[in-house]
Length: 468
Image 1: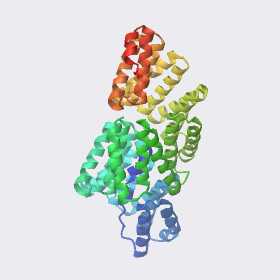
Image 2: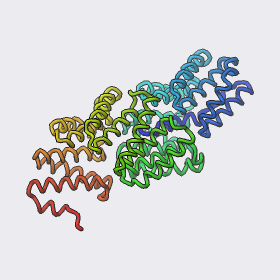
Image 3: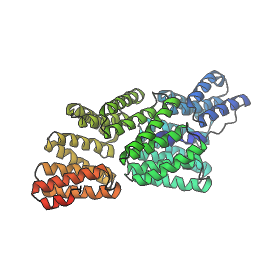
Image 4: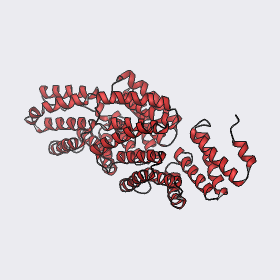
């Protein structure tokens, strides 16, 4: 998943109920909550750390409250080891003083769900989110904002796992609940819009994604301001889809703004900053500024390796992007190294039926296509095809790209009937989802023209050539 995962923890923004501690400790917690809600996570962490000894001398319940908020704050700062330590200690304390059906346990489970989602442990994340949902449903019912927010968080896990239909279902259910109980200009409602935008982007419906992202951006700008991390996420998401749609100038504008704010608010070692510069790398790669793209890709890769380690989805994204860059630069040995490492890691993280694994297969196929190893290329493409067909559907841009690759390959090996079939299908998809002005449409059309010329069908080739 892209940088939206931070937003899936919105429950931490508003599910911050004081737990009946003494006035002094309640005041401390309220002050920290206010900093957290304003997106000032570093300030909140410093404040809480300065009060740790004070809370440690309080009763267990008060100390548990403190650790829960501290863990949530560390989550937002990507200090995941510290977050896990604080949250598991809070869990140990709450186990001693509260029933497992208490609402505080729902908050704790939600926080742990977010933590493990960020770390790429989706199975563990799913367990904690479902546990939180069960508590919210039992204590507050299914039409409460807390239930809806955790439902959205669980949708984010399925989004990351590549189960887009399931994610969309949960997001829409959460959106329906919020529409009943909250104003449509509430930041939590904007979260649902953003999440829906994310799943539609993953499904290749960029027009629908843009609508939701723009609406979320407007709400967050009006309610939280332009330096809040949520507003910046909207900028980053818009920059991402405009890149996919071929609007590179527009994309660069949004992504540079997001990068500047994230550097100021979160610092240059935060995963969200890495997301910004990686997206910028995508833009520069697409417009042929390879030196600038490589600089951003390598910086993002270093941050992700430091924060997450190598067995994390975001690290594999960096490998994939570098592979694509080196392929475009004609450095095929470097590209192959990156793609093969990404494939190995994705198989371990996701399994062989995930869209991201298929993406690695397609990339390797494209690479071998480029230097004429058509046997290897064909094997990778044909392995990827049923995975994307099942997980993304037959109108997704990635599926169209795969068909284009297969069409080009069959044209090169002289199977012109197969080539024509695949390229015509790719062209139809490009026209429907991206329009005739997009580079991908032109690329597939050009490939089809070459196939017709090789077949000696110059009449059809001339019909497809653009008029000057």
